[in-house]
Image 1: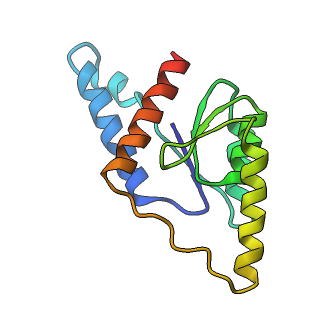
Image 2 (image 1 turned 90 degrees about the vertical axis):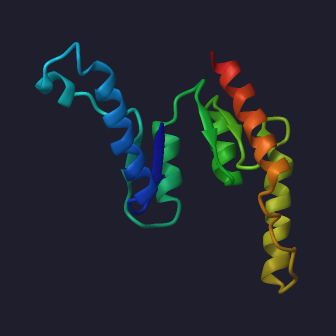
Length: 146
């Protein structure tokens, strides 16, 4: 699991430390202390330099076909779909090569409306239904990867 941003994310750093502790505790009785200390986390935080699309560029660089990506960023989604990844958004929507062109077009149109001063409305809040939709999409994507 990779998190990429232009700054360290405290929640991710905490998750990495907790994952290391958990992984090491499972083998404590079968390894020496030094061997257990070599066990790292499978969660990774990559900090990139600030700049337009710097995090997106790094994600696209390290992404491997057949992997799962979770992002709300439509242009990044298009890049990852082109590389052969399964892409879902943070609300449980699956993005595919069949619909990404439409989503890019909608994004461009919304950007034009915002630039003209027209408001396209607030983003919907996360509610129980949204969380369930994401969980279902996540489970389905993981099943496809198995």
